[in-house]
Length: 374
Image (cartoon, rainbow, N blue to C red):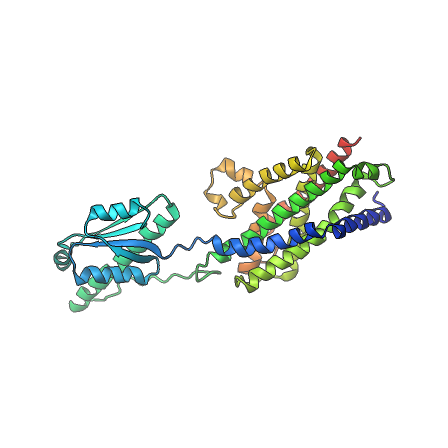
């Protein structure tokens, strides 16, 4: 049975510790702001202005028209012209260009015959860049083909649009990568700070002897651990508020769902992250070990949670591992509330595992802590 007076005493003591260490508090609140602002701009899956060289052996207006169409897509930026295919390859080899567009000497004549070929060499050491370049160049070629066929059909009296395909992009019509990345960063940053600060804070008290002094008091283990994490729940809410404000007002991320539901699920996720930190603190003997274990936990969260890569594209064994991470569920819920305006009832299949994870991991931390000091 929890004694609320003793619990409040532990919470008060923890708030005093936080107040007496303003540098740590400034780091907890300041670093997320810097990280979100920096990574929000830096992590961008929208590839554009790819350095491109052109080798036009035909020196024709038809080739120049194709190059103009490429540049108009904003995917390509022509940085130079070369006189041979070998020189174009050399530009890519020496990292002066990522794409080379090649026209043979008979290109203009073949255009009129209806059988012209255009070569596109791409540096595929960066698969994302290569995929964007190949897709954009193929799309330009397809668009010009449609124009030519349309002109021919129009001259023959036929319809120039035999197919009318209309595509509607939901929730992110401009396909901004920030709309996907920034909400993910919010979850990643909360995970990093909450896990690390809890693990380090508890281990630090063990190293200084302050924790053993608390054990001699009537405070129970549950009151001690819960009392220590509640102040960091409040800090987590402040941190979450700051990064959400930056997301909405700096990166123009919409908030289409319920503000209350967003903070409700945020509370559960913060408690889950603090619980992970509690468990780490019961294993680590020193603050260095706590930091190392925390960073060991961060990497799977970044790679497997769906922050950057879809979980559905991973092998089923890895998917099962991803579904053991609270961040995997939080990111789906966070993006759903922010971008789609989803309610928690619509996302219940992701809400209940996260809601279950939080009390379970906190209980494990309390039980391990009791066992450790018995």
